[in-house]
Length: 319
Image 1 (cartoon, rainbow, N blue to C red):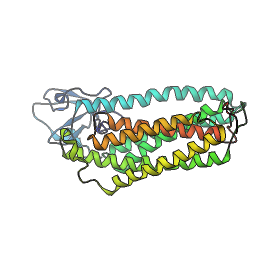
Image 2 (cartoon, helix red, strand yellow; image 1 turned 180 degrees about the vertical axis):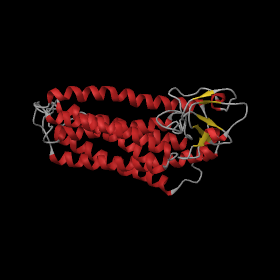
Image 3 (cartoon, helix red, strand yellow; image 1 turned 90 degrees about the vertical axis):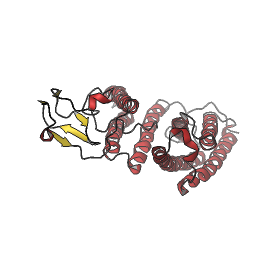
């Protein structure tokens, strides 16, 4: 969300390095310099990749290099490069406890097969999300790929929350089919809104490429129809969630976990207003998406708690 998606133009390395460069001079051709296979330089506004290990002469010899053909993006910005690199490291670090989780769940297979299934599904999702990240880079941030890359994070959230709900499986038997079905509808609307919002964000990114960051007011001077759909759809999202909250309180006499739906929904709408009327303040975009992710998480967990299989005693009394 910082616009750093192409900070590393190749994958899984970054400009052919395990640890990315920090200065533009590291990506310039140098005479009498040792290059390793796969390393990248920027020459004549194109990425050139080393074919095999070699040492340069005093004159550039194109036979030692091949043009990077997956895309034509050849820009180095050290901030974007390291943001993207840290993003990739975070994925790797996130995968480690998931691997441990799968290993530990093997010992619970006889007692609870669902735990192993969800653990493996989580691990697969993390790997697939990393692969989607590669596709996004290879296609130079093609909008559909970005949307899929964002949406698949919600599958990871869902699997992890499913694991969390298993510990409550035998604690009680409080469920409500009607509230469960309403919740599923609300979650579907949230995912649709996130998808539309991702397309709006892609448009804003394109505007950022044409306008200076100090002229944010021009980014939505002539917004596309998808922006108006996103803004209007938020009214439906609000009404659906309010209806769910009302019915939940009617049944259980308290909002419980759904109080967080109310809080996060309010903050999500507030940041959307700030984005539009205050011309995209710094960090407002990633905060807007983060709140959307948290909103989905709370909605999904509430639905799990309302399902017959994972019903729990929420310490509420029916009226």
